[in-house]
Image (cartoon, rainbow, N blue to C red; front, side, top):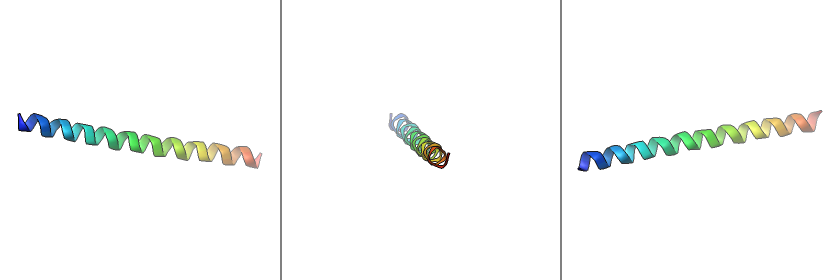
Amino acid sequence: MQLLQDTFLIDTYHEAIRLELCTDFIHLLLTEISHRNLIH
């Protein structure tokens, strides 16, 4: 039972990291787009 719980926590942690990375990537992308729009 403990092993299952640990696996669940690890999965959740990885998912959180993945979402965090996605959020950072989207943020960078939006920043890049808005900078280009300001230039043109």
